Length: 229
Image (cartoon, rainbow, N blue to C red; front, side, top):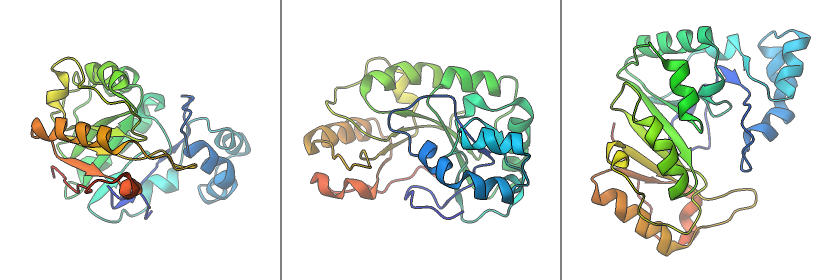
């Protein structure tokens, strides 16, 4: 499925639903609006359709099997890996291995739970595993778990990026391979340009590529469009 998320070519979403109560969640509102249509297209039972409407994790077989578009694929804009069942994870990882010419991105706000889901599984070299964070404190807490993953392909998405910025503590952040910055949306709330510049310079000083989303155009900075792949 094509997307307005500018750091990826398309989204996949074989799973919808999340048990994490995020104050900035757009996916829950989206699911409430389109759950009926998605349930019918995927042939879900009434029970599964109700779960989908309530934004509880549900496997979507037709979403999973549809042809993918583009080179860079965001796997889970409508779920968190920490909620996935074992069989869902196995199927998704197998397909990622098969589609080796593409790059797949998976995000989580709960890396400790996500690593439990991935435990004992070989991660394909074309998979990038990332954490969502909004500030340095969340970054510090979540990156400590993320770096335990059995892959060198790690990234961070600051969406939304919230001020104030300070350099994160610890050396774990040096293992990050890519950083994305985005503004708060609905309503749009831009971060201070000075904080964004300082954060960008911090990561670039470590040699880490940076991507600024289009919604940061009004923050008074030159947008970066860097990728590690």
